[in-house]
Length: 373
Image 1: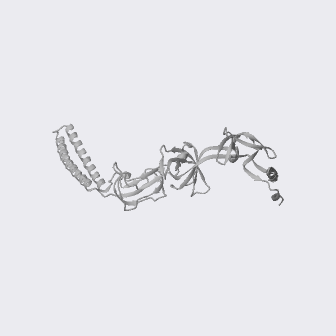
Image 2: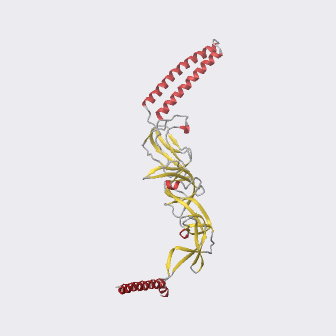
């Protein structure tokens, strides 16, 4: 029995020894691991975030009437460039019955006072010529007569304004002629001939007859997510691209970030605005969709390396790379990093352009048979 046990133990040992030899032999036959290398190069690295929005005029002016009525004639159309004071539309006034009656009553009252003062003046003039009254009394009668005459004329003009919207002597100030208050381009004319319009007053915004804007002062209006708003600040440069204008990038400057966000589709969005460079004379239609790249940081013509080649010490989290010192031999070198765009990172110190950096996360087995073929 002991002999059998001894034999079994010897057989197990022999099998284990044979297996170990085979494992070592197979391991020795495996292709060696070859690490590729890359070199740093000079690049311009831009770190940015993107916001979506529209191109709109910096200021839009709404032209509204100062009298109610019906549009009788329109002198402009969308796309026209006009000057301040140019006629936009003409309104036919439909008088308010109560206001018209009050104005008519005022004319009659002024006429009664005028007739009375006229008779009194004529009597005083006759007495003055006869030497019955003094010059001062005659002057008082004359002043009262002229004041009554002026009140009568004013009442007549007010009646005409209430009835027709204008009167003789107003010139370009006639209420029925709506004029531009600024210079710019007509973006929209939301009314047509025959439409009724309401005057602008303290209780009503009034009907918009035309929308004007200076298209040479355009801005980008967009939104950024709450995860990005902490990375941006005012005066950062923008690169704006408009989908309708191919192969063209517009320069702008971020000059407004909303202090309060608004929830949209479950996410908090913050409004931003950027003023486009005035030197660019390219015509951009208001309302076009656009994307703005907000330049967070930029490093021009610096030594750069693929960020995937950077390793980090598991204890100190300090960045380093492995530099080739011979055939498949590498040494560790600590590096100082700068601006990163997510693909390339600026190398401030640690390596040179001639150093070959180990691609530590990309393995390539050598296949001699494939090379022969």
